[in-house]
Image 1 (tube, one colour):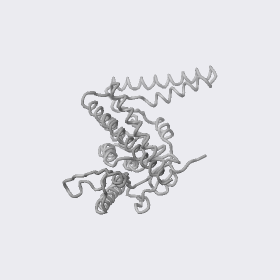
Image 2: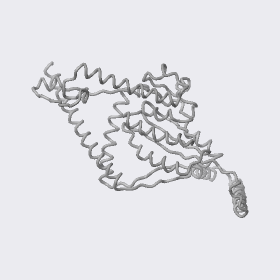
Image 3: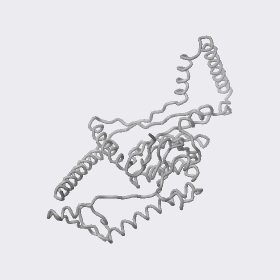
Image 4: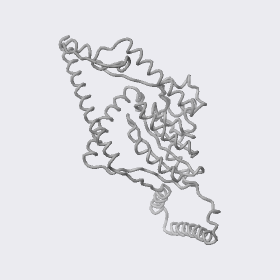
Length: 356
């Protein structure tokens, strides 16, 4: 039985090593394709009116529900209103008073679906640049954010893109419908107004690092691994070499420093938080997050945007890039492997509660 378990453990270690090697190769291919896209291909900004979308939905429902006479009267009323508005603008333009007409507020709607490496930051940076080229202080930017977090420096860069909006004095509202945890909350806390759905997951203001170590397995099979470094802390913990207590202490010291930076960042943007209570790595659902002041209001993004459409013009902004077949295939492979790893991580740390 002991021999079987040892053989089975060795098989698992070999399998894991093979999987990690495949993932690294796929990631390398994806990184090369990504750099090639950045240098060789230009994208474009696509803009869609959400007001028109809501109006089209309303008209479809009216045609299905209202009787013919009521529908005719409603269409006639809408056309009369549009004609009056167009006439007023034409008259103001003729008299040189177009600037005196009240301007409707514009709301630019962005989306960010975060993975382990915050890959959509490349799209986000272009979208923010496009919006800031036209947005006025009386306008607003709404970001629909979904992310369980990931690599620190990637999410730090994504958060920096949102800080650009704040520095331009453009109101920033962030809506979280499902999850904004760890790096996701690093982005969310920047908002002037942070809105979450009642059962959205928020928080996880903490830092985690984990890696397997195969040193004893390799040593047992007479396999030597040499780790050569220049600099005392060039490598603190390794996967195949023998880890030392000094290396572990340094690694933990670095983790604590990153956690302190994370807490300082959150505190700068949400000074109303009691960090002693919320910066423990814990997560909270929407209602509890509101009690801890992690969010400002409970509401879905759909409800918020639909309300705004009554008094503002809403524009969904998305940056699109052309990609070749090879690039799409490599990106799909990277995304698939990343999603598998993220799913494992979420099951182990975040998704602990189910409704059956």
